[in-house]
Length: 374
Image 1: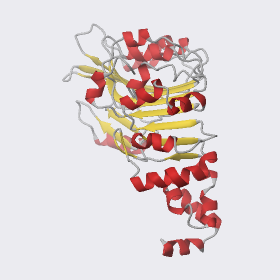
Image 2: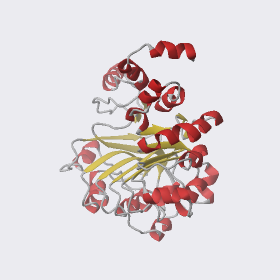
Image 3: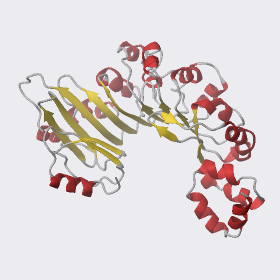
Image 4: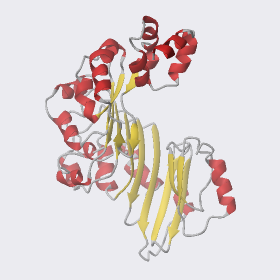
C-alpha cells in the first residue's frame, strides 16, 4: 500500500478524484481515509460521503456482508468522522444496528435496508427501539430489499406485509405512516399467500407518502386483494412505479384497469411508470383479447407512450399480456416473443425469450438493434 500511495500522491487532485470516482465509494473511504491529510481531505468530498452504501448485491436477494475488520473500522473511525455529511445510507442486515447506532447522523434522510429478514423488519418497525425512533424522526426516503425464506412466508404472514418485494409491505405498521416518510421503495423476492383480510384489517392511510415503487419478478395472484388496496391508502401519491407479474383468472390487466383502479383514485398522481406482465389460463373462453384491444385500452392515457404485447400459447394453455410505459425502465426484459414490438431499450442488460413458434434470423437482428447494451 505504501508504494501505491506514493505513486498516487504524485498525481494532481483532479486526477485523483477522477480515479476515485471510478471506484466503489465505501472502498475509497476504507482504503484512503487516514492515509495522509491530503487523501483524507479528498475522500471527505461530498461525492463519496453524501450517499453511501456499505453492501453489494451478490445474487438474487442476497447481499455481501462487511467482514469484521471493515465493519469495526467503519463503525469506530470512518462513519463518526463523516457523520454530518451522510444524507443517504445503505446497509446490509447483519451490520444494521452496528452501523446505524454507532454514531448520530444529523443530516440523514434516506435509508436502504438490504437483505433484511422478516423478524428484523418486524422488530425495527413495530418495537420501540432507537432504530424505530430514527425512522420516525428523520427518514423521508426508505428502500426495503428483503429476502425471505419459504418458511418465513407461511409463519408470520398475518403480521406483516414484505420487500426484489413482500411482507413489510402489505400490512405497513403505524411507524411507516410517519409524517416524515415521503418515499418508499420496496423490492420483493416473492409474494406470500396472504389473506385478503390483512389489507382489510389495516386501512390506515399513508397521506405523507409522495413516491412509492414496488418491484417483483415473481408471480402474484393477489393484485386486486393486496396491491390495489395498498395503493388506495397512499392518498397523496405523486409518483408511482410498479414492476409486477400478475396471474389473472378472467382478463389481462390493461389501460381500463389501471385507469379505474389506480389513476382515478390517486388525484395527485403526476407520474406513473409501470412494467406489468399478466398471465391468463386458457379455458375455452368465448373471446380472447387481441393486442389491438389492449393497446386501445390506453387511448387517452396521459402517460407519454404505452407499449402492449399480447401472446397466446396453446400448448401451455396460457395467454400473456405485457404492458409497459416507454422508455422501458428495467434492466431485465423477460419472455420476449415473436410479437416483440422492437424499440430502443438502453437500460436493459439481460433478456429471456419464450415462444411456441421458432425464432427466425430477422427476429435476432431486431433483438440486437433493440438491446445495444445487453
